[in-house]
Image (cartoon, rainbow, N blue to C red; front, side, top):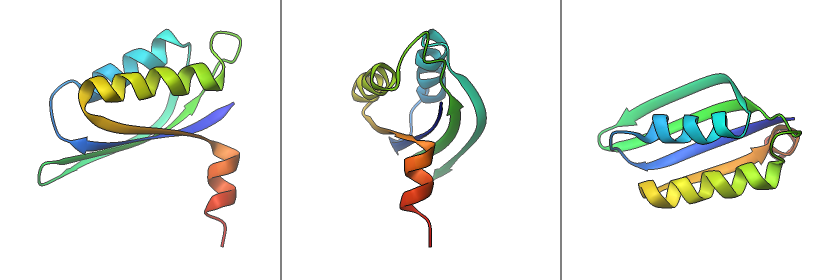
Length: 89
């Protein structure tokens, strides 16, 4: 299952490492990643493939939200098909 993971918040060290670590623990693969820092605002978007035999979507979403709270950033995880449907013109 493919997902889009978005991270937004005040820049600080360790954001990419913490999010990537959670994904690795859940057996997910990062297919593509884009990140930037605008002034002091960190923004990252990832396309991720989940291994649902290791961790289902809800588990990954909950774990990413928890790491986001620890880091003081917002982490939003969406199924790719829902994401594509929402932004279709």
